[in-house]
Amino acid sequence: MSIIEHLLRPQALIPGDLVVIASLSGPLHERYQPDLHAAVAVLERMGFRVRLAPLLQAGRHHWWSAARPAEIAGELNGLLRDPEVRAIVAHDGGQTAIGYLDLIDVAAITADPKPILGYSDISLLHLVLYARTGLVGFHADLATPGLGGAWQRASPQRRAELERLYTALLTGTEPIGALPAGPAWECWRPGRAEGPLIGGVLNRIMRAQATRYALPLERFDGAVLFWEEMGGYASWVWSDLQVLRHAGILDRIAGMVVGLPHAIDGLDNPTLPEIVLDVLGDRDIPVVGNVEFGHAGPNLPMPVGVRVALDAAASLTRLSLLEPAVRLADA
Image 1: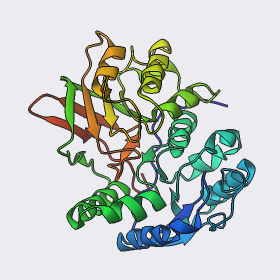
Image 2 (image 1 turned 45 degrees about the horizontal axis):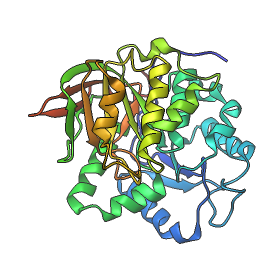
Image 3 (image 1 turned 90 degrees about the vertical axis):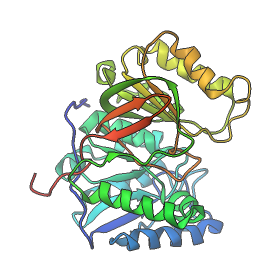
């Protein structure tokens, strides 16, 4: 096992490329079959061909997973090795990625890097594959609860904006620039920072750092840490941030971006900003909160490893992608 320091950008997609939706963690429940069909329609409207991986069958499961970890890894490895497959979108999150981190064909990733899209449990994959290969991970909407769920409940204008943004991110080789800021964005601590974007679900960051595939601490030097959380209690968020503090991560980052919290009990007293600032203490870094990524959905894409600029002020909060997330085929 080795830890890689360079950035590995996937090849840019072109119209007609094959995108596969796969069960990389949790199973497909029958009641979400219509949402899956809606997700396929979104990807087709973006100009891609879409295929469903074999494990993505309603009612198929092993405990809380789509299949045993080795089966999921086998299917994922097959997609990574298939030259026709140009991107992989996770159907949903779950609790399974931790079980097959050691079974992933990292040589196939370095030979033919492809965008892998998803959040929740999939953020664990992004972090580990970034550590092991340098792969840019697309912390972005899942297929069923995202493209086929939250996107369908958004306004037509918002859906169109997201489609343009995701298409540009996957197909364009120029920096996106500023992500579209929403009205909920807040400056929790002012300042400006530039650095690689690293993060995911808060508890998955901790799990990744507890494995042998953990990012070395120096990889957090100057990084902009993004995280979100769902479920549980406010005290858990405080405790998990304390773990990052004890691990030395908070001493190294240059900025922080916090996603919209979802279904967390006890965030009235203390509030999420109070929790974050309490743990940060006197660390003078910019912090922006309530950014639209995470389980509250729909998600702004957060490409892991890409250099960003974070501006935090009472009059302006902005997160800008300074580099493309994909590369030309011959680059």
